[in-house]
Length: 288
Image 1: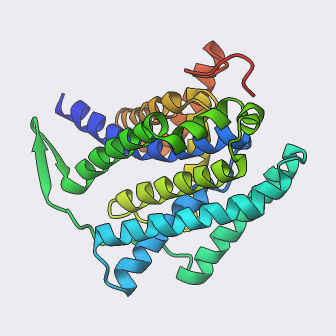
Image 2 (image 1 turned 90 degrees about the vertical axis):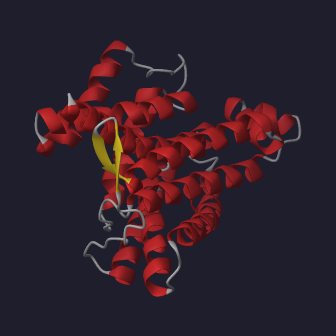
């Protein structure tokens, strides 16, 4: 039972990271209806920028993370304007190709700047915490708490603020939002800024636990797409629930079957769920 509960807590920690990353990805998809294939590499870049501020400038963990979020938000705005906006009226394949070019550029940039080897951010909270007989580090607990806070704040922002409601309006009906005077281009830039900032936060929170490397973004990006599809394309609740489901599947499968196949479990869950519910957990018919 203790092993089971330990795996559950690890799954919640991992799922918290997945949920935050997938939430940003599904917001972008809801506005542009184009998968941002560079999202995983932006997540990776956020981790490296936090590492850069801590190791080179001696910033504290929280200062480095907030700085990384601000920089990634600006990079997100730049990518939306340069990579996606010029192609918004073009066939989707053009945006796919442009996004792939962006992710390759980001990965190459990181390799040139920091090298191909992995790095680890010093753990600011390494001390263990006991919860119901289960031991986990303060940093792992921090990931869970911070992710929940980010998710709640983002939900409040979307539901209770004027900029948030404009994002939801543009996601539901882009043309209708334009007709009532909403600046959709500004909404797109704001959505990309939020998406990339939350990705930077997720990467910064787990960087003291897992080693960062130039290739970490590709796998995380694929998993984020799995989560978005599992939850239903464009569904915010689906992205959150899908992230936690995937985290639990990976840790339980890795703990009780084999850690070598934990990534296989993610795609197996995708196939199984879509076999019974092709639109995803919260997807709507006709959403594509």
